[in-house]
Amino acid sequence: MNSIITRFAPSPTGNLHIGGVRTALINYVVTENAKNKFPNSKFYLRIEDTDLKRSKNEFKNSILNGLNWLNINFDDEPYLQSKKIKRHQEIAFKLLENNKAFKCICSEESLENKRKKNLENKINDKKLCKTCENDEKIQNSKEGFVIRIKIPNKGETLIKDIIQGDVTVKNDEIDNFILLRKDGSPTYMLSVVVDDHDLGINLIIRGDDHLNNAFRQNFIYTNMNWLLPKYAHLPLIHGNDGKKLSKRHGAIDINDFKEKGYLEESIINNLILLGWSPDQKNEIIELKEIINKLELKKISKSSSIFNFDKLNFFNNYYINNDNNYDRFYNYCKNNLTLKKFLETDEKKLNRIFNFNKKELNYFKNLEDICIPYFDDDFLTNHSNLLDSNFDNLVSEFVSILIDINIWDKELISEKIKTFINNKKVKFVLFGKPLRLLLINSENGPSINDILYILGKKNSIQRIKNYISKK
Ligand code: GLU
Image (cartoon, rainbow, N blue to C red):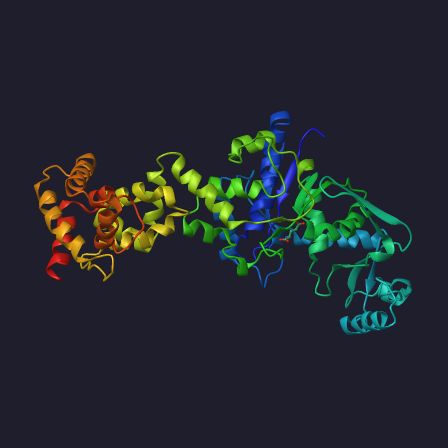
């Protein structure tokens, strides 16, 4: 093998799911790593759009945009499976010609009845059609048939999977599945193998929900005398309740993560640690390093839990890792609420971002945080903390603020300290109610930061409004 050829083969029947992203990511990483040794290695994207009813262009775009956003780059243009239907049909007929497949006219209903009866009588028989294969008239018919593959009943099939290890299935457990439907359309089982063969895919990395299919697909390869690919079936991702990750657990479409304001690195860092860990103390790992370090065979074969708290931890880290205001700025341009704030007062928004980012899980959190700062009609809510002691203090404090000529953070901080020392009150006894007065929240940045964000005019106005309402 002097190149590694991989692919990500999503069906555009839904938005790009976080589990799909992980499959794509691992294909990409493994191929990028292989390129160091075998520069001709390739990672392809194949859109499996043969289900014309369920496939939609918007889903195809969601897949392309998601991969693009995460910098999971594929080689060449995306391949469209629907363009290869003639080739799939050709192979079905070749298998028929070579006596590796047969025509079957059994109705779905009659097969279903057999299935039910077998179940009742506890008979395990996967090859439901036994008669058509030996009926000359059916085999000579020109239409009205499906093409089924021939699978022996004896023996067993072994898949050597890089992640799952050696897995064996008895051939009598494998059904003689359909290759070509009555209307001439190829099934997934056929199309995927023909396309993988034609693209030269020699390493298939996909979810382990396809492991069963590998045993079936194996027969198309061997019956066509095609070289088998290597397999690595990834365990699926579960939610924290141990069930397959779904909408119930939170965001699962990559677009939702983007809309919430997660950074690419956080998604990638979080996904790559599901079932794998780099040999290092720190869990922070970026794409370049992942490409150097990931080994398929070290990925665990048991399913792993997608942890949203962990994702938030990574995102908080990456938001704070460097300045990142540009990325926040770009995020705001695409977020209706933040865009308004950006257009009203970018400087203020920038300050809010900087003074709150230590606590941020994702950019969207700032929508709510910003509201009190941008509220022109801001009114302080009633609270027991705002008592007469505080009222006396704040009435004096406002004149100190009025005297500050340059609205500088350090200076504001200094003035507060001096005021508190002079008045001999504990900082919290003044700071906590003042924070409430200014933004209606007990949490948030320090008082001097809040005053700095609001600006001189606005801060004084809020305090005066408060006093006048007493
Ligand atoms: N199109 C299939 C899916 O979206 C994947 C096929 C494969 O990886 O073999 O589930």
